[in-house]
Image 1 (cartoon, rainbow, N blue to C red):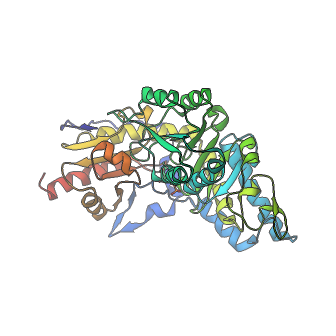
Image 2 (image 1 turned 90 degrees about the horizontal axis):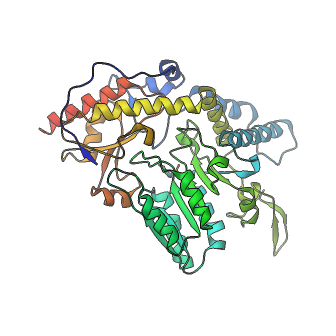
Length: 426
Ligand SMILES: Cc1ncc(COP(=O)(O)O)c(C=O)c1O
């Protein structure tokens, strides 16, 4: 955490690279929305992102022209729906460089993906005395499922601490691995509060040396940077469609094929079975074994369209643009006297998620004042209460950015924060 003193604003704007943000903004109808005569500045992208018309049109086209259940109907529009659904799975596999589409399980989102691993792999691999390593910067979604599992299995959680500048404590991690090991390491690729990008590749390498499996919570990384599951060598990886221009209610669990083969089903029901008899059943192969009942067909097809959209811009370009924008945000906000900004200061080590407090203004009051200026931010504990405890605060205000945000919106945020200070006589 750093508290800054007032310094002059720079005259020059940072370069925005060869990235046509104005053109990108044209794809997102909601970004033109006015509230009380002002265009919104949507800075709550860590919570959910906006949808381009390419994704919206894909959903409308599905519901208008070929809405049908999949893997069941032997008629034209059902076959079209099945083909589009499975094409989306293949696109997503390619997007994260999975070995095959069979390694992509459709779920509701990151939360459900992690619960699936806990309840399927975890229940069958953990026992009394086994440890799970996680970190103090995890989202509740990557804490609570493991607490439930540990309660049932009499296993225990081991937390890796955080340094004062918002990084994971590497020596603590090594110590946790060496001290009677762990069956599983589960870690966020990027923090939804601090923005910190964790060195998951190296963490996975070290965990594997100790025969630990690794789950990567990629909710905040897959939308913002190239992620290659084979290069990372992660065992499991979870992410949400709605945080990457896709629809809500759809997400992905990636897992290595041999793990999915060995895991029992999570939910039981139609379409995940091979045969059902009165007292026993057999299962389909993965991923279908984990996709019981009618799934979010439109969501999966919409997520495929979101992947097309991001690919057409390029994930490397998106990462570089956001890195430059992060630099601009950190420079701009750190000029506000009395602000405390949490997380690393080096934009190459973090994402465009910036949490802060200004003086003793409560985060909810701050968010309310920003809303008066049509600026949408999140305030509160961001589903990361153990991290809030570590930071010694109950809440922060969080501005989080995506490929369509601009330096002008950062300027609006900075101006609005100065106005809040005046309102609170700071
Ligand atoms: C790091 C992280 N993990 C998990 C989640 C949960 O994602 P979802 O609510 O889409 O399941 C979030 C959502 O904010 C997140 O930021």
